[in-house]
Length: 445
Image 1 (cartoon, rainbow, N blue to C red):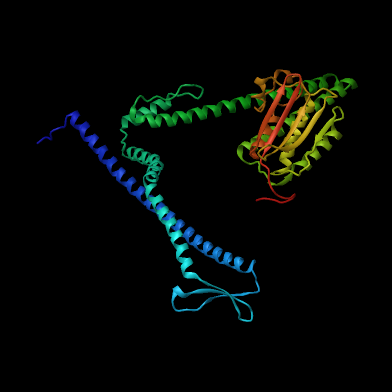
Image 2: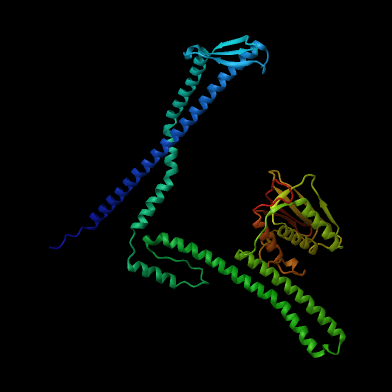
């Protein structure tokens, strides 16, 4: 005999009952967990109250004894002997203070006072119990509110574990993925309610992959463009040398100088690219020690005076010593990049100010301020991107990687930049770091 098939309405009712049954089971589980948490909370609170009340009893009793001695003697005499009189009944225990000769100076009956203090502490304990009782409902609501997201996750996980994918659904997913192209901006759309969670997760992954792909393509294109110029210059002068340089000393000298200059520029660019590549791959390690910002900025200041004679440098040193946990060489490299940029974009004679200090909330900062060409507001938001150079800055020689390296170093030190710049007025770049309590030379693992 053939089995009688259920109509769609009956199937829908059965499914609804099954889901309702699962929800009831899950609700009972969460109620059980909530009760256990509540019992644990009550036990901890009772233990805390009992401990506090016992401590209060002891402190009140000791305070009463000290008060009686002060009333009797005017001070606490350490040369007196104190003891509890021995007795077989608790009601008759007394506190005795006597001289070294055995003369009794003070005798206190402890039981009446202990009864009064005990009644006070017991009253406090009863109030604490009432507080637990009155707060029972609110605490239970708090616990259930905390458990609500976990309950929802458990239900969703149960639904996902019971979900069955037919071969048709697998084929639908495969076709949607195979139709995508790396350069397309389209996202996956299965058009199936059962696959909405997978669709959202895969679309988020696609967005991140495309962003990474675009950044990588831009980085390669920019690097190729930056390397193409010095290579073309070197090749041009090498061809000129091959044609006329052997006989013409002027052409020979000009070619040698240009080749040296461009090869140095290309070497610097390659070193910066390798630094960033090692940083992106996690192979650029930092050695963290306690570094004095005052001393490090003093070194940068003295080196700048010696290297650059075209700009007056000033260093505002704070009165206090400021220490941070940092890689000294890396942090100094980041500061040198900021100082070199300030000198590059400031006309000869323009002042460059170096400073160190603390923020209002105790963090450390260092800053470099120049009187150079400044930046437009739209360029400030992009200044740390790799190979980015503002239009006004293109007439100055550079790779466009220095600030990217500085940002990588500061990010690794859990710091951030605060940039204030105005066109034709100058730029102030402040690096804010977490201050560290310690002594110079102390190292951290």
